[in-house]
Length: 197
Image 1 (cartoon, helix red, strand yellow):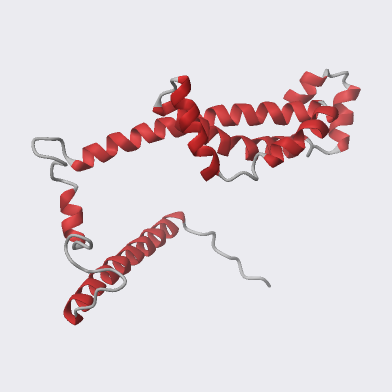
Image 2 (cartoon, rainbow, N blue to C red; image 1 turned 180 degrees about the horizontal axis):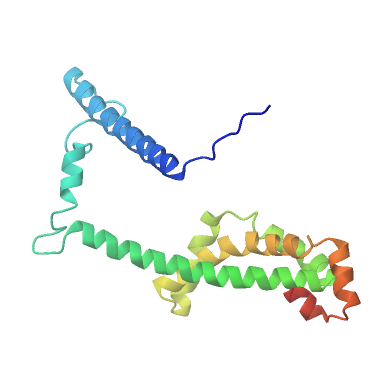
């Protein structure tokens, strides 16, 4: 007789994840402070000098989040939140553009074998150029064309996004079993209906 296995408890799994996170965070903080303590006591300066300018205490770093970034200014935490929301907006715009472009390319390649054979090498070759080489060109051309910061970052995010979306769309649309596509043909479905279903 086989013993029944209890299903995993999601609450216990969540608690375990939180505990692991806190343990790792505590180990990092302890390592930081231990490094600072030992290196200061021994007078060592290599690889990082443990003074308060270069390597402040963790509680000083956390406390600085709740102080103004500059005299009479807003809190550093609010400033960082605003900057991260701006970056999130740039990333979402770029992701949307790249996803639409990649999905369109994937659908086009599924519908036309000739287009796939002609342009797939260029799609693959586009990913061989490192993003570090493309980013400066986007910035320079963006300045010449008068594109704002948002659009320059969105173009880079779209460039990173379009390739995996295009390849996964192509593979996904080619993954139905032949019997499913034969069934659609037997129902006299148009290519658009077959693609949609």
